[in-house]
Length: 244
Image 1: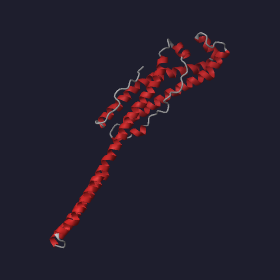
Image 2 (image 1 turned 135 degrees about the horizontal axis):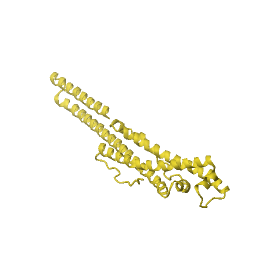
Image 3 (image 1 turned 120 degrees about the vertical axis):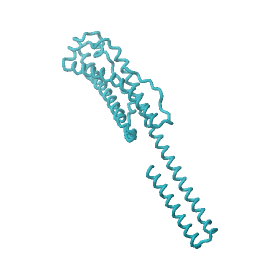
Image 4 (image 1 turned 120 degrees about the horizontal axis):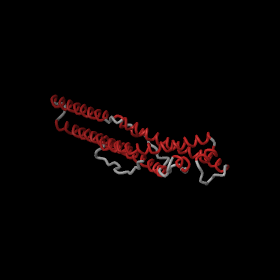
């Protein structure tokens, strides 16, 4: 855009100088009558002016389209964070029901994959922020996506263990659906499987709250960056992201 603008202005200046030179030569040498000179000079100047205005108008339209895309990229990043936080908040609500570590390990139910699993950050759409000195924000958005992916990974690992190990072994031990102690549960699973189950549950309890806590900070930074670089544009003002 900048190169095109400079090139267009330079071309217009050279054209005007060229026309001026021709007019001056023709006038002083009297090679062409003034009336005849005006007959072809003014249409040429009109055509040149029209071309310059059309060029400028096209440049303005391109700049507006580019700005709309960038504003949309910021708003989309905020919406993706809100969508991901909404899913994690449902998990966090279940986590908060655990009375102690034993209840947390044993009672947390399986969770289905998030309905918005397709909603992922496209950090590459925000790379224009690098040119404006906000490279760290792009990195934070990408890091937030990785933290969310880690949460899903921990939940999936725990779900797999629940259905493939815990339920079958608890059923064989005859303790399925019965109130039992941690020792009984550990004995039914065995030391190795119980350790795997305990680790999987602990990872879930650590990852979800930490990820939820970081999300509102990234949203605030995205909104501030949008207002800073595109002050005449509107950005998503209010999204309630649950914090653990």
